[in-house]
Every structure is written in C-alpha cells, then in structure tokens.
Image (tube, rainbow, N blue to C red; front, side, top):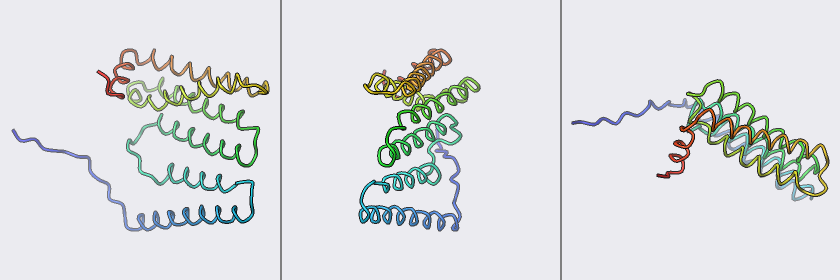
Length: 193
C-alpha cells in the first residue's frame, strides 16, 4: 500500500508583498525605537510603552500569518485581547483610573460576539471555542478580583459584575450547546485520556 502525503497548496506571496512587509517591519521597528529614545530623553510619563504595544498589536493582527483561517471566534477573541492590552497599557502609563471601567466592557463584548457566533453556527465553530473559554475564565477571575477590591467606584463594580456574568454565561452556553463534545474537545486539547 502506498501512502501519499497530501498537503494544502501553499499560497506564494508576490515579490511586491514581501518588499512591502519588509518595509513595514522596518517602519515599525524604527518608530518603536525612536519613541523609546525620545521618551527616555523627555522623561515620564512613559508613553513609549503605548507606542511599542500598539506597533506589536498591529503587527500581530494584520501582518503575522494565521495558523487557522476562517476562525471567526478566534478573530474576535484576538481583537478583544489586543484591545484590552493596549487599553491597559494606556491606563497604566498615561491616564490611570478608567481602565477598570473600559477593559471589562471590551472583554465582555468579545465574549458576547463569540457567544452569538457559537449559537449561530454550532458545527462550524465548535472546534474554535477554547480561546473564548480561556478569555471567559480570565474575564471572570479578573472581574471578580476588581469587583471585590477596596475603593472601587460603583460604576466600575457594575461593569465588572456584568463582565463576570457574561463570562459565566458563555461557559454555561458552551457546555450546553456542545454537550459531550465540550468535554471530548477539552480532553483532546490538553491531551488527557
């Protein structure tokens, strides 16, 4: 018996695309380095962290290749995580005080969109649920920690509570929609017998 290895066709990128990617890479690297140097010369606040994080997020979202294509849930989770990262860096370095209000909303919105996608296309999205489950666990844990922290304003507690509730609802919906497939995929994901 002869076994043939069949791989998907590799899409060749054009020479112009390679040159454009190289130019963009150098622009990002030069801009990030220049922002760090200028920020070191001018002193705090450390706005260069926002520039470097923004460049890294743009590179990750738009220029790095995807391992799995057409993963709608993963796409929205990736955008939610990147937006939360940039907002937390801005909130920590430039303008403290508002990140506890905005970041739970971003995470909750990503989970809500993922839940709608899961409910609308169960068969197509059941293998893509695990990034959303991880985000929901992080969202629930982070929101509850922020909710029970001292000196938290009422609006921040309200948003954190709603975000934690959204994460819990997503976990319950994922388990109820997928049923036994949920636990089977969980075992496969972590190589458990």
